[in-house]
Length: 104
Ligand code: FES
Image (cartoon, rainbow, N blue to C red; front, side, top):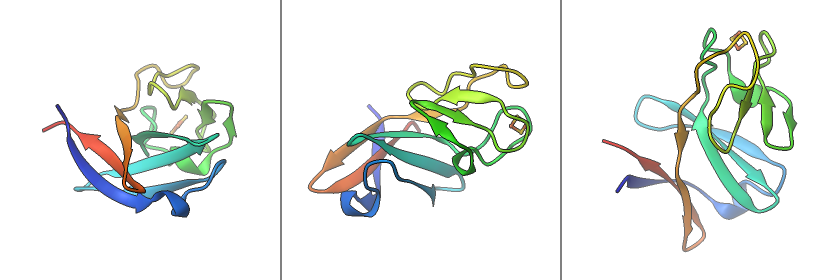
């Protein structure tokens, strides 16, 4: 069972929006796609590019540095030059708060 940490209120990240949070020495990108939240580490596994600054197409985020694509639902790398997944985190909404699940 992960430990859940609040990062924002739901009102702060509307549908189609995203934001990045500094959570315990890690940057975590949170996306709202049609009212559902997804969270991945804001770090491309190719060379640490800031994924949340890239274009989102459906559930695919494109790294702004060299164009690798990742699935924000799973963290899976979908195209070169990235081959390994980025971390994804469980997300839950409780009392209007967006919470990220961290594994200790
Ligand atoms: S740092 Fe993301 S594709 Fe190179």
